[in-house]
Image 1 (cartoon, chains in turn blue, yellow):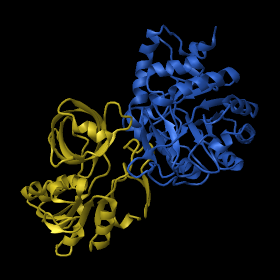
Image 2 (image 1 turned 135 degrees about the vertical axis):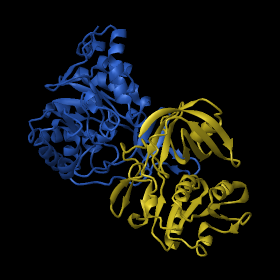
Image 3 (image 1 turned 90 degrees about the vertical axis):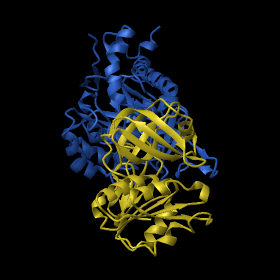
Amino acid sequence: MVNTKVDLCGITLDNPIIPASGTFGFGYEFAELYDINILGTFSFKGTTKEPRFGNPTPRIAECSSGMINAVGLQNPGVEKVISEELPKLKKCFDKKVMANVSGFSVDEYAYTCEKLDKCEQVGWLEVNISCPNVHGGGMSFGTDPEAAYEVTKAVKSVTKKPVILKLSPNVTDIVAIAKACEKGGADGISLINTMLGMRIDLNRKKPIIANKMGGFSGKAIFPVAVRMVYQVSSAVDVPVIGMGGVSCADDVIEMMLAGATAVEVGAQNLVDPFACKTIIEELPKAMEKYRIENLKDIIGAAHNG
Amino acid sequence: MKQSLFQITENVHLTENVMRMRLKGDTNAITASGQFINIKLDGLFLRRPISVCDCEGDTVTIIYKVVGKGTEQMSKMSSGTLDILTGLGNGYDTSLSGEKPLLIGGGVGVPPMYLLAKKLIGEGKDVSVILGFNTKNEVFYEEEFKALGCKVGVTTVDGSHGTKGFVTALMENTDYTYTFCCGPEPMLKAVFNTSKTSGQYSFEERMGCGFGACMGCSCKTVTGYKRICKEGPVLCKEEILW
C-alpha cells in the first residue's frame, strides 16, 4: 500500500494534486462531475479587491500542445467571493481551499488577504505576483525582487495562514525572486505561472487574442516548469508547489523529483474535466511502477548525487 | 454535462465545405436545442465546440463548416470514435415562443435551428424559418425544414437562389410572435434591430473549456457578466449589449 500524503505548510494533503487557479472556478462546476473531496485541495479563481470583468474577447488561442489565455483576472471581487462563492463551495468541499489573490498595489494585496484570512475554509493564501494579462499589476510585482519582497511582507503582516507566492517564469533570474519572497517571510513558493506568448491569425493578419499577448500554458511548457522548480527548490528552504504543463501521474512524480512538495494541474482541466481525478487514481499505480512507497520521500530526489 | 465516446456513423458533404456528421452514443445530457458539444481531436489541444443540429434517440447530428485545423481533421473521418463533452450551454427556451415563432439562421447558424424547429412543430406551433446564405452553392437544409412542416424562405446575398439580400429582407412580410436567431454577429445585430418581437439570440466566442471553468468566453449583458459556454450561448433580446 503506497502513501500519497504530503505536508504543505503544516496542513496534510491526502495527495499532492491541486487544480490550479483559473482552471477550476470555485470548484462547484467540477463537483457536478465528481466528488472533489478526492483532491489534495484546489486553488480558487484569482480574486482581487474589486470585481473585474477582465479583458475583451477573444481571450483564448490554440497552440501546439497548449493554449494561450488572456482572461485578465475576471472575478466577482473579494466581498462576493466570501459572501457567495465560499458558502456554495462549502456544500461540496470539506477540505481547506487555497485562496488565490491578485492585486494592483501592495495595499490591495494586503486588503484582499486580510479579508480572506478571516475565512475558516481557507487553508493557504496563494499570492499571484505573476499574472501576465493585466496592466500595471500582477506580473510587475513578480519580475522585481524588491516588489516581490514588499508584497510578501505586507501580506504576511495581515494573516497567520501560510502564504505562498506564485511566481512568473517571465524573468531572467527566478531564483532571485524566490529568495526575495522567502526573505519577506513566504511560507511557500508556487511556480510557474504562464509564459508570455502570442498567436497571429493568418487570415486577419492580426493577433488572435484581443489583448494581443497572453499566457501560454499546457503540456508544451512542462520542461521549462520542471527546470524552474528544480532551480528554485534548491535555492529556498520553504516548500515549492510545482506547476506548468502537468497532465498525468508521471508528470506529478517528475515535478516532485525536481523538488515540488505538491503539484498543481492547470490547462489540462480545461480539455479533460476529469484530469485531476484520473491523475489521483493513477498515482498509486505509477508509484508502484517506479518503486515509490512514500510519495513525500521523493521530493527533490533528483538533486541528490 | 457528460463526457463519453461517440461512434461516427456518417460524415458527408452538404455543400463544398459544409459537412454533416452523425454520432452514436449517450445523448442523455443533451436537454435543449441550441446547446453544443465539445469534441476532442487527436493532436489538437483545445476541444472544438459545435452546435447540435439534431438529437434523436442515441444519435446526435452536427453540421460544420471546414475552416481550420480541427474541422479539416473532422472532415477526413469516416469512422471511429470521438471523445465528446455533451449537454453544454443553456439552449433555447421554447416556452416563450408564442403561436408563430420565426426562426432565422445564417450559414452555419442554420443547424441549431433544425432541432429547435422540430421541437416547436412538436409543440403544435406555426413555425416560419428564414435561412440566409451567400450564394446558391452554399444552401443546405431547405428541404429538411420544409419536411418538418415549417414555412421556409431562403435568401442569398447574390440572389442566385431565393430572395436576393440578407435574411432581414424576408422579415417584414412574415407574421411572427417571437424571434429565434443564430448566425454571424452582424446578422444577429441586423435581426435584433429589425425584429418587432422579443427573442433569443445565439452567440459564439473562442472558448477554452466550454463548460464554465476558464472564463475565456465571457461577455457583458444587461443582467451582468455571462459565460457564452455556460449561461449562453443563447441570450434573451432584452439582456444583449452590443
